[in-house]
Length: 289
Length: 315
Image (cartoon, rainbow over all chains, first blue to last red; front, top):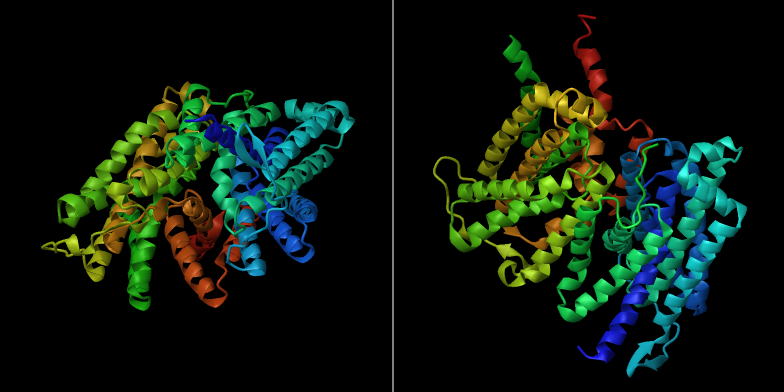
C-alpha cells in the first residue's frame, strides 16, 4: 500500500471516527450519569440530518442547516426527556433500552410521515480539496475533524471547570452523594440529556453531506455507535474518544485492505476486547444502582 | 385430571389458533406460527433467564442458512434440512454461549447485536460466492415431496408448523414447571442467592441460552422451507429488535405472550401498512405506552381478567 492511499484512508477514518465520537459521547454521558441506555439518540441524529437537508435546500447553507438541526434535536431531546425519561430513570437498564427503542422506531415513523421514504442528497458545502502528502483531501472532512476536536475540548472544559460539569462528574461517581449535597439531580439529568441530544443532532448535520439522508439512517449507524461506546467503556469520555478513533481507522483502513472486511472488522475487534476486558477499555466496575 | 389441567391451557390456545386459520388467509397464519416460534426463544431468554438479546436474527439466520445450504447444494429432503438447521443452531450456541453468558444483561444485548451484524456482512459479502449475496439462495424447486406430510405445500406446511409449535409450547411449559425453570427465574432475580444455594448461575444461563437459540434456529429452518429462499435480509440490523418488541407487546415471560404478540404484531403490520403505510410510528408509540403502563403487555394485562372470568364461580 502506498502512502497516498494510506493518507487519504487515515483522513477518511478520522472524519468517520469524529462523527461516531460526537454521537457516542451523548450515549456515554447518559449511561454514566443516569444509568440509561438511550437508543433514541439515533433519532436525534436523523432529525439533525433531515433539518440540515431542509434548511440547506431553502437557504443554501449547510452550516446554517447543521445549526438548525442542533436546535431542533435539542428541543426534541428536551420534550422526550420531560414526557418519557423523567418517569423511568429509576428502572433498570433493559427497561430504558426497550422504551428508548420504542421512541426510536416511533421517530422513524414520524420522519417517514414528514419527509417521505426516498433518500435525499445534501450538497457538500466546501468543494475545495487540499493536497496533503501528495493526495487530494476534501476540506470538509478536515473541518469535521476540527469540529469534533473542538467539541471534545469544550466538553472537557465544561466537565472540569464549571460547577455544573463538576456536579455531573460527581454524579457519575455517586448520584446519592450529589443529591445529599442539595443539588437537584433531575436538573442535571435534563441538562445532560439535552447536551447529548444536541451533539447527536450536530453529528447528523455534519454526516448528512457525506451520505444520503434516509429515514433508516439511525438504525443503520446504530451498531457502529454502540460498538464505539462499548469498546470505550460505558460512561467514560476519554475511552469513547479513543475507541471512536480506533473504530474509524479500522473501518477505513480495513476497507483498503479487503473491502468486505470494512464493516465486519470493527465488530470482530469489539468481540475480542469484550472477551478480554468485559467492561471495555476504560469502563468502570459498573455498579448497579 | 391433573394431566388434563396441565394440557388444558395449551390446547385451548391452539384450538383458538386453529379457528383463526379458518378465518384468515393461509400466508398470514403461517407467518404467525413461525413468528411465534421465533419469539418464543426470545421470550424465554428475556422473561425466564433475564437476558435481553438484540441479536436473535443471528440464530434465526444460522438455522435458515444451514437448511438452505443443504437444500441448495446437497439434498432434497426438507425434513433433513430442518434437522440440519436445528443442529447448526445447537453448534452455534455451544460455541458462542460460554463466551456470551458471562456478560451482564446490557452488554449481552449489544454483543448479540454485533454478532447479527457480523453474520449479515459474512453472508452478504464475504461468503458471496456460496450464498449469492443479496440475491439469496432459491431452492423451492429443489425440494422433493415427502410421503406422510408434504411440507413443501403451504397447506400441509401449516399442519406441520402447527404441530411443531404445539410441541415447543409443551416443552416450554414443562421447562417452566421444572426445578430448572424455578432456578432460571431465581438467577434472574438474585444471582448471589442462587449461588449460595449451590446452583451454578453459569450452567443455568448456558442451558437457557441453548434452549432458546435452538428454538430460534428451528424457526429459521421453517422460514427457509416455507419461503423457499434465504437472503441476508433476515439478519439485517433493521429487524434485530423485532423479537424483543413482540415479546414486550405480548407480555414478558408469559407462555402465551409470544403467540398473542405475534398475532398482534403481524396483524398490525399488515393492517396499518395497508391503511396509512406507516406502521413504525404506531408500533413505536405502542411500545413506549406499554412500557410506561407497567410493561405487562397485551397478554399480561388480559390474563388476570380472563382468570377472574373463568374462575368466577369458585371465588
